[in-house]
Image (cartoon, rainbow, N blue to C red; front, top):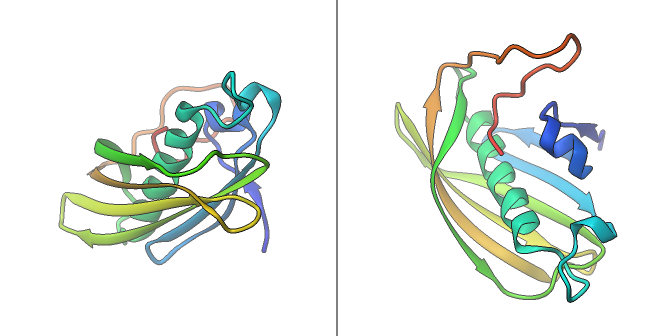
Length: 143
């Protein structure tokens, strides 16, 4: 499996790596650092929600033959256990229409224990890359 960094400045700053995005499925990962933690030495909820949002968004994007980007319309998240160590987030497309895609996601820790689950609705948009400095390509996913 070839890992690559997503071309989204926020995700690059977090250290999120993409393992897979194809056919309505995705997998990303983050090796948690102290800066990702809350006061209980576990993943901050915002980090968990970001991973789920991005995993679902790129799964939805990967199921669109037109190569459109997506924006999050709504997202429901359930936190099940503390996130520690390396976290892997997986997303999958559940249903799509011509303008929207419905996805599910989950995060597991290095032992395969479920940390969190989510569902989300995303709207397809025509990809219009923002003006950025040279070399900072847009991936089309929000997050």
